[in-house]
Image (cartoon, rainbow, N blue to C red):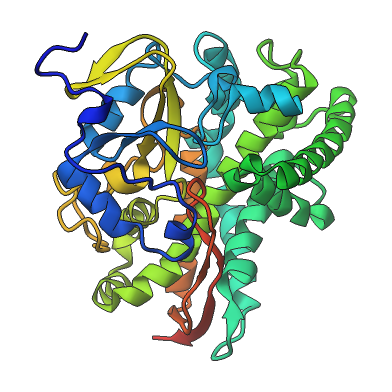
Length: 416
């Protein structure tokens, strides 16, 4: 029985607001709803959604608290994993086992993360700089000036897919498959529909077969790529096939979507805020901070999910074992108590690095430095060429509450 100072599920001061609806994101009208939740019901029980009931957590402080308590708030894929769509019943129905280390709890999570993390350490990422700059420059130099083109396809996808191919030493001429698999792997909408879940499973199996062939090749001819690193570790060399596929989905979706959609946000957002763009163009020293601000403003993954494993209270709200908890990074990154005027881009924002787009705690994005490298490099190479992306139409957005991004964005380049 909750105490008189502890709120239970039905005691929200406002009616439940389901912010998991895909049209909120495809139509870019989620902002007002989250603003209302932050002000009036920062932790709210939503009893009905396409993904079942869940706790909606929309402010910064309780999200950090939840992320800091992995023994109480589980990421385990068998309990539902890291996305709102996760369901043990669905896993059983479709035999959809996709274990990945971000969807594991310690100690197994710890061993697998330690295997992968050194590949994304400071010195390893610094060694990628020259090639990243050369590849970025080559892409930019191939673009037309004063003619319309799709920034998402020609820049964001091309650059992030190229980096993934490099990290995995994946066949260059087949690198477009990485983008395709990432799109299917990160689309939670596909999982709730019996017709499309089969299509997603088929794509994941296709990916698994392609990487299984690389796995066999690297067993006899290892290199410095990420697959070889996994093969040579005690924690990962004996992975079951499903675990291998799950970790590949994690690394491909994580390595693709965060960077791709932040690159697209660079073109779109700075066009919306011309005064901030002018600041950045006048002072390239602002680029590293501007990258953090763009990642905060875009928030490429809208949420992460946890499952309560024992009854607990968060910010005066009673949660019960088995409850699904959805942490809306998208909203926390606009929390007015942390980010003043958080709806706006400020390239010189003093605390831009406090964003939660990479998560917090033991599950913080292992590849964050690679994402930052690619984004900083893109802005640097644009600045060297004095290039500006002028948006000439509203973007087509991803209709989903997990990956927060752009399907297409028409721009014209000009010099400044």
